[in-house]
Image (cartoon, rainbow, N blue to C red):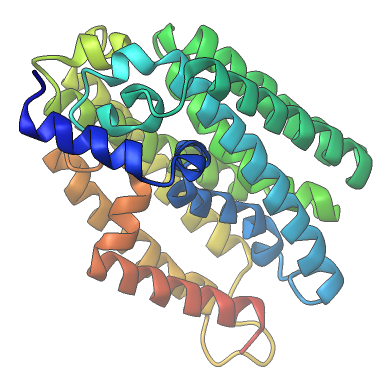
Length: 312
């Protein structure tokens, strides 16, 4: 005989809108909350001061949509492949594929269709370099889901490269030359957050980390701490060199905003490092969106950098 909670759950799914249950489960698996990461596609155009026309905005919106589709395809395939491991995780066990709401074959099929659609659309609607970058992202992430996530250090490099590709593709789509300091800052900033996330997982799931992410058993918390500290230092150095490269006050500017933005950038890294040190930096988007001081620092940085780009 079923216990009362089980009966309630059974009735909820039996009486509820079952026609919507699977589509909503697929949507949840596509990770709408993480689509904010794809805003990195505007990073290079904003840094170069090129976000100035409707044509530019429309092209970036297209790239954002295609990259979101590609990333969602990867999430679907990843959840299908990791369904068993996710059931042992205190948070991931609620994912639709892990609980059985979305069948594993359906997740694979939806992910494959979405990825193929994004690749074909990029080839038809974007310039060749943009299409090549997006397809390379899909291939790399599929390799990560199938094998590379189990290779020591390479898993960190692949996830970091995914963030870097997001930041590069906007500039590639608009034909904007990418500064070496921009690439260094973005790459090591991403590595900082990725290593901090791994460190947080290792701290929080120390007793069962082999069941939730097998590779965590091969990392030590000391090593992961070293990686995120090293990456944070290089990201700060790269940003400072990038800001100082432009020289002093631009013509018409009241203050050297680009150089002053270094203060906000460093404060943001230090604030994020507080959560990393506590082992509470599990999801970068949660840290950035939920911590009010960090949000204020981010807005201050955006304001100063915006004034630098517009020569105010």
